[in-house]
Picture (cartoon, rainbow, N blue to C red):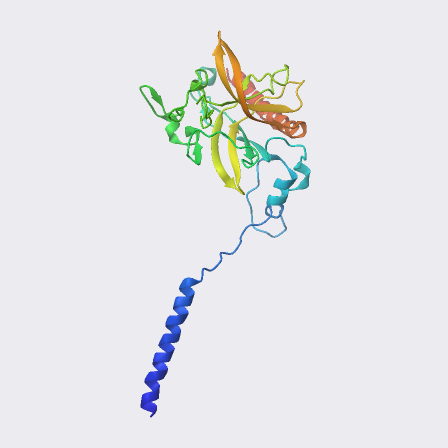
Length: 290
């Protein structure tokens, strides 16, 4: 009798294990949520491990602050056209041969502003299906050239009518009017004393990522290594198409605009001033070396 029962027990155990394996295969284990609020990640606590410190200056809407757990001091309820902006000065490539000597090299900083746009509110007219792209300025491609092709200068997407002046900009060209197929350019008015509608400063697009996080689109812009004009407070940015009439640029259509407020720009001006003093000290050293 015992000899008959033993095989039955083994079969039952085998069926149970198989059923358990099948159940395990059909159940997806939810990954552990490792995210933490920004404030918690950027606040040092005695005895904790080292951490990477955010090097950006921020401004953002109350909704953006709530989503990411950002500190309240950078909230601007009146922020218009974007959900957030982040400014930083990055190390760039070295400029050498200064003062007539090959060994005299100076770092050329990149002044970068990231803007986060909610395309559910402000859809952008993309000329490409690419979800992200970045300039060759961040890779070795920028040093490569062949006849009629420079690695650092990307071409507009197929079918886009490029602006004759913007062709020489070190910028991506991801936006275009869906009707005329004219390239859309970004301009700002920080350094001009003229009316708010006069924008003379081009803003190259260094990179972009659509739906980068929480459904927001990220645009990385080259802005700004210069202080504002003393008469400027709020700085306005416009995405426009243009045509050239008798050598003058004429705006034909506006697709989007946003502003960077004075409180945010004062922080930019402070960063630019610090960088300017560093540059001035270096130039003085060059003059002494002569």
